[in-house]
Image 1 (cartoon, rainbow, N blue to C red):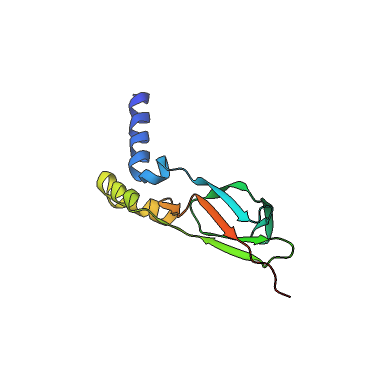
Image 2: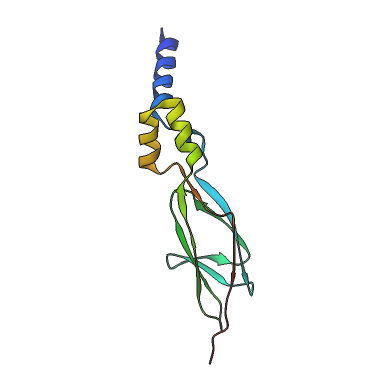
Length: 126
């Protein structure tokens, strides 16, 4: 009887969660580089290293990277995060409305739009 209840509970939990919530990675590795190399990378005023660098970024939200290098103008690059149609369709076909609502409200469908960023910094003009 206990095994049966555990199976029912697990099934209900699985059905009430979206596919992306269960299976999709929440982070993505993004290769970041600049010309010239050695630029300091900032996210929300926080330094996260210098180029070249691999960053682990959340798939759930967009991020603005700012690059700073002495003698060069600061350069920013926006990485967008948006829903992926495949997850939306899979949720709907396999589970119906509840998984669609769960993944939609948690943004678990989202993916960053790139795996690599390359920026060119421009020298400051005197």
